[in-house]
Length: 231
Image (tube, rainbow, N blue to C red; front, top):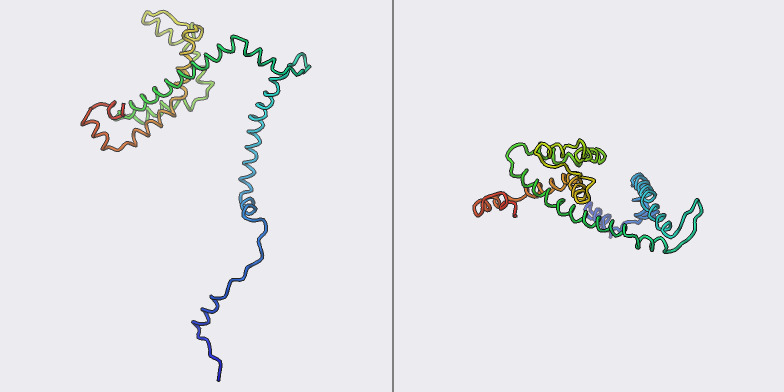
């Protein structure tokens, strides 16, 4: 009796049913293959980390050790906590802390309120929104040195523009940066002007993302931009 012959379909099924033959194991694993593929990216990343560590971490570590040392004409001696004791007993240190806290509070209040009001005004305009957005964001694009020189000219007690305006209206001239009662507010206003552009655009994008149905409901219940902005 002859052996049964396999039909082409059965032969194909038999070939597919055979277990796959494992090849030789690959070396390096998934991490090694990923490292080879991203070698250039890792190189740029390592360079950035080294630069950051050199210019940020090294000065902090160096400053930590200098806080416990005393340098006198090139001679370095270890004094322990004596420098910290001197700093904490100095009235100027606590005055600096108070000034920093006051500046932080004023900058947070104005830094939130002014950009929000500017965003509401831009959102309510029907024409010229693009130009006004550019003007609002322009201080962010200016170099800080240019902004400082601009406000130095505005606040100058001799020929500053603010004192010129005050003199035009018959008001007394002010020492904007020399008067202790005005210097903090003057610096906060300058800082708010320099940094409000980004926050104003974020608030504006949020206002423009509100569905139109909510604006219509706000106009129906309580007309006005304050109702539409949620204030």
